[in-house]
Length: 336
Image 1 (cartoon, rainbow, N blue to C red):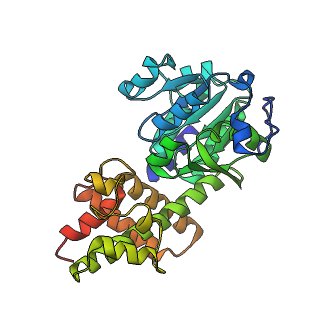
Image 2: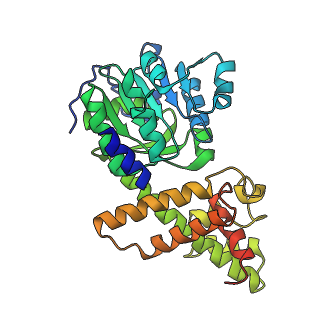
């Protein structure tokens, strides 16, 4: 099975085991105000751009952490705050029975769970394992099977909202897994997000995230094209953005995350496209959408074009810039 997982990663209900107490309150606020009795250590694997602020929000809600990242320097803030920092995912599983993973790719997730020093080497029965990475839904399903074999529970819970929402605790979580375990997952996820949505069986959270990011990429490219065209026709970019945002063309990419420098403050386009959601990650997510479209025989004409545009951007040196840098890419590609 591990070989099968690695192959899937490279190319792109469960029983209710847990006896953890379930939160009775329905609201996220009530969930987050549970007594300290429920706040046993939580494992967090992957504290990069997204994982770092997510883990810190758990700390703010009183949860002690057991932290691991493949880059030790990423754990410095947590070590200085007195949290436990360990040397492998297996060590996290040994010390915590609720673990959140936030990793860049399917291959990283497979290694964290099934690798030589992975979670499954030391995971305890009844543990709740929540993967907030954006990965292939098929990989999530395979990981869930492996986790079930050792008597633990796996849920996929990818996020939307970006680094800003991760810092403010306003992420949206799309959760797939055993419905009976959703309340236990929500106890933790509700401290990092304002929306925690149950989507269905394992893999459906990933499916929702992939669809969202495909639409996000298409919308960002469309916004960048419209803004670029308007500017070349002589329109002031701020005026054009204002008109778009009071008209039928309005979208998140135009009114919240505008890709044109100088139109908005506090977004990557105002900071040379630094921070935010990397172009390479968007290309990766669009690749997942492309794979899923192929396997389900679903036509995604614009999604496929968006995938090619973001892959070309990566080849042109935009990999580490925010995905809204597609505006800069269009401005510089005069040959179009």
